[in-house]
Image (tube, rainbow over the protein chains, first blue to last red):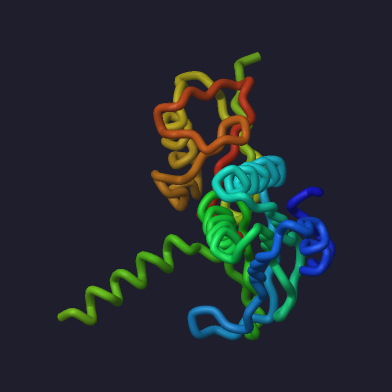
Length: 150
Length: 82
């Protein structure tokens, strides 16, 4: 299955892909479009990707997790126009026990955010739009942090 | 015909240059660092971070990595998946 899709994400589909009688511990993570960001009202998000690179990195991350823990992983990220409440990313992990399932699930979502070339443009309630830049947000949070120490 | 590097653009950088790719004369460009310096000297290019991510053949490349017109090169804005 491709990891990038323009179709609606359904956690049930992912769970079916990884289910097996010996895998009794299942963990999942869903990332939904939220209605606010940095104090502004958000109406929707447009996701885009460098698709061949993003596909290959998603596959690499899934393979890494399955090599590190005795689990099966399903990972899907949505592209295109999403509205508040839509699922943008879904991770499901099944293993023999909960520890491996939670650890692998956390690994997959964190590595996806860190390495996979996907971008989002937020549409705000006031009609404006903006590309989201997590590196800029991290910098401004650090600046605010220093300010509070004075 | 002089050799040309094609650089794919995405998201913020596609908006910045009003295109989904740049065609850059390859002469004098040997590394990712050379390429970034050339892009940043273009009109509007100063908005590209000196440390911007560059992918060569679908893999993130360091500043000293080699680039040539045969490679698939892409300039990647800060990642924001999830």
